[in-house]
Amino acid sequence: MGPEAYRFVDFLGKTRMGYWQVLPLTPVDYRDECSPYNCISAFGGNKYLISPEMMVRSGYLIDQELRDMPSFTETRVDYPRVVRYKDRLFAKAYERFCGGGGKRRAYLNFCRKNDYWLSDFGIFLALKRHMVDRTWAEWPRRFKYRREKVLRVFAREFRRDIEREKFLQYVFHEQWRQLKAHCTKCGIQIIGDMPIYVDYESADVWSHPRLFKLGKSMRPLFVSGVPPDYFSDTGQLWGNPVYDWNAVRKTGYRWWIQRLAYGLRLFDYIRLDHFRGFVAYWQVPSRAKTAKNGRWIGAHARDFLKILSGRFPRLPLIAEDLGTITPDVREVMQEFVLPGMKVLLFAFGDGDAANPYLLHNHTPNCVVYTGTHDNNTVRGWFENEASDSEKQKLSAYVGKTVNPRRVHEEFIRLAMMSVAKTVIIPIQDILGLGESARMNRPASTKGNWRWRMPARHLTSSLAKRLRLMNITYGRV
Image 1: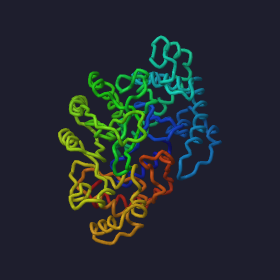
Image 2: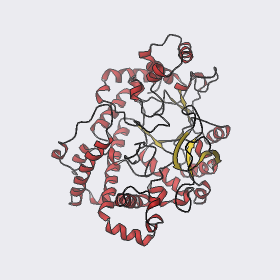
Image 3: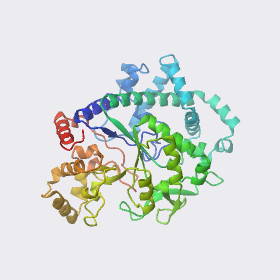
Image 4: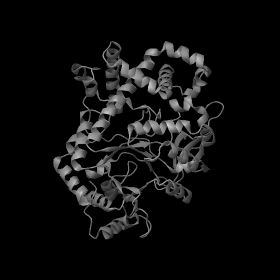
C-alpha cells in the first residue's frame, strides 16, 4: 500500500479505467500455502501489505530503519524474507507508538468501532503464538472452549502481544483508507473479493464455533470443496469447515451481515467467491482424501439475500458463478439481479455457438473477464494448453489467424466489445505475459500466489493504448 500502489492507481487513471479488482486482503498464515482464500480472519487486514514507507510518513518508523532492506526479486514474492523483514519493522513501529509516536485517540476509536471482531482476533493470535505448532482444537479446554474468566486473565497477561496486533490492524486500515481515497480521486472504484469460507485455524471458527459443522471435540465433521470439474478430475478438496446454515439462519445471519458491512467499508463492490455455495454447497467428510465423494447440501440463499437486500438496498455484489452451476443458482441470481462472470478462456472449448462464454451470448448484467487468477494467462493458455480445435475456433471467431504474441490483445478487444456493463482484465493479460506469470493452479499447493509485477512494465505507451481502447469501445 506504498508509493508504488499510488503510482499504479495513477496509471489506471491515465487509462480511464473505472475499476480495480483485488484479491482478498484478509490475513493468512504464511507458514502454509499463502493463499489469500484461506484467511485466518474474515475481518482483519493482511499486515504484510502494510507499507514501511508510509509508516515513515506516519511517524512510526524513521528512514534509517528502512536502509537494511533485503534485495527482493522483481517477479516473485519471497514470503519468508518479507515476513522476517517486516516483523522487525513492526516491532520497532509498535515500540515507537507506545512511546507516544502516533495518533492514540484515532487508534482507540478504531478499536472501539471494530471490537466485535478485533479483540477475539488479537487474543487468538496471541494464543497461537503462545502454543506454537498446535491447532486450537489441541489447546487446553479452558482456551478451546473459551472460558471467559480464563480469557480475561490471559488478555491481561499477554496484553502487549494483543495490542501489537490491534495496532497493526489500525495501521493497515489507515493505509488502505488513504489509498482508497486516492482511488476515488482518480475515478477508480475498488472491487473486493470475499472468500466464502474461512480457514479452520481462524479467529472466526474459534470464536463462532456454532456457525460451523464441528464435532464435540471442535474438529470439523465436514469440509469444503467442489466435485470433479474443468480444473481437476478428482475435484478440489479445499478443507475449510463448512457452515451450519441452519444455525447461521437462527442468528439472523448476524456474522455474515457484519462481514459484508465491514467489506463495504473497504470496497465499492464485492465479488462473492463460490456463489453457488450460498444455494447449495459440496460437503466432504473431513477424513476424505479427495473431494470426489462429497454431496450437495442445500443452504438458504433466498432468505439470506432478502435480508441482505433490506440491509443494503443496492446489493453491490458480483456472483462468482463458475464451475458446476445448476438452474436453481441461475434463478437466485436472476431474482436478485446479481451479475455473474463470463470468462473468455472458456469460450472456445467444447460446445457450439451456444457456448455462454462466447461474446454474442453475453448479457449486459454480467462481468466479462479474459481470465481469472485460477486460469493460465491468455498467452500461456494459447501456447501451452489450447488444442488445435480451440485455436481454430478462436481464429474463426475473430476472422483471422491469431498471432501467439498478440493473442492477449485479441482477447482484450473481445472483452471490450461485449455488451457486458463491466470488463475486468488481469494485469498479466494486459502485459501479454506467459505461463510463468500465472497466479494460481487450483488443486495444487506449491508455488502459487507469488507472482509480482515489475513497476517498469507500466509504461506511458501502454497507458495510451488502453485509454484509446476504452474510448473506442465506450468504456470511459
